[in-house]
Image (tube, rainbow, N blue to C red):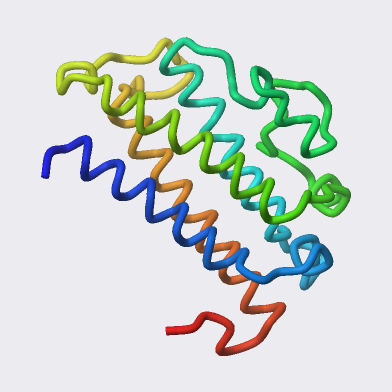
Length: 175
């Protein structure tokens, strides 16, 4: 297994986790907040995909799929390439109304495919390219960003699974 296959395997595991978490959920459950300071499953899945879309688009010097393929319309969101949920307030999270699980999964899958294409296009030397982000110390590289996106995906997919457990109770995940 080479480094591209290893990284892609991690990204695909995030998608598998999201699929398990969303399986069989109703619109009410996707948008349910177990408490006023808990993110919803729909918001977490959207935010995870939006963050990855923004970052992969920036790394690969392409338009975000959010804008290019008009995913914002399917999510009934503004056509704002900066809107990814980053720094959303609890009120903004509560106001977010997720589309159905099919749209959440389709958007995530489109972003995953773009990430896989990008990763497969890279050489090992490309991983060391520093990003033009002087506000970070040390300055991140392409490799660091790709791992950060994996970490964020694992965290948010885990959070979504946790919220499902809060809603559905023990035993929701079949073994």
